[in-house]
Image (cartoon, rainbow, N blue to C red; front, side, top):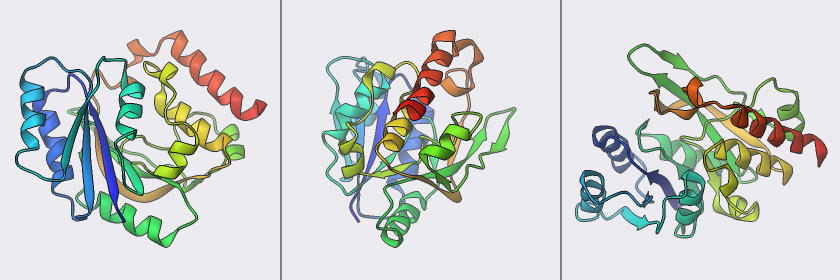
Length: 236
């Protein structure tokens, strides 16, 4: 199965970026294209590094946005260049398990009727050492009864290209809020079920700029956005 790994990059510390990139380049699965979206980074250490990758590894392709409009817009830009059957999301400050793509390849071959599958993650920093434990199956009705909105992880998730194109990609209006949750809602509204593997296949770096774990960045607008998204599941 041909896989695209889609990773947007903007202002990521280069040591973290290198760890993320290397974890994808050295995957055990061989048939993939690593698509890095340069989200209009200023010329410098980041761009020198990512564009240098194309000289050393044939699986890497770089596309650049004309303007930095946030992660949702960057991801939609990258989707235009994905030509595989399966798209796997990667963040520029995380570290993928070497078998991430192999596990997804096997999963979707074994379940041809499924379209979206997340993985469990290990959240870490100098003070945190914690693991996610998301349910194996999320339907629209189940999402409505869950107390929160965190039932699948964005890093490491895979979806069939046909599915994300059907729902229209990411919602650009959520670029500074919760573009991932907005996408999950779109999938659920279109009748898709979201699945999670039990395998821990992503090392998720928690730091002050990690939106989901930075209370000072969770504004009332952010909470209102999440509420409105969940209301959509109930209204339609």
